[in-house]
Length: 125
Image (cartoon, rainbow, N blue to C red; front, top):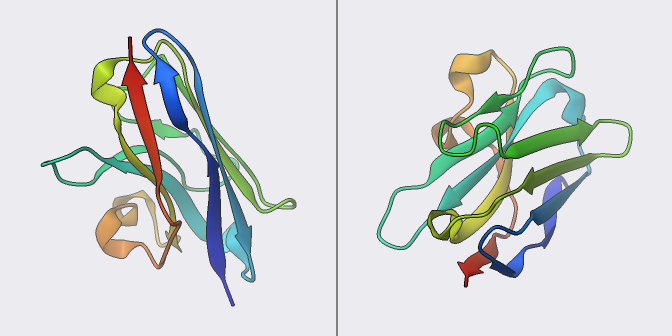
């Protein structure tokens, strides 16, 4: 059974660095786009970063551009996210997700087929 299992996150300080990992099992993940989303209290789920194909450059939302690195390893079945210089507004529940890769326009929560369990990240002083 295909599934995504997340680890990392927790309580981190402003200006610090957060690392999240997602392990994908049970599927041909090289055919899927993979992404990290987040949802802050009272807000919609938003995309943070994505990788469509291993040869294509990653996408980063403007809110994390310059502070964020997403990386995937299809052989290992992993998707990692690092955000540096953390801000209060980075506080959210973070989710890894995957969907069949029909193209970059399909990288959205609507077209995700699999979700990780979610990980709370809280940025504090």
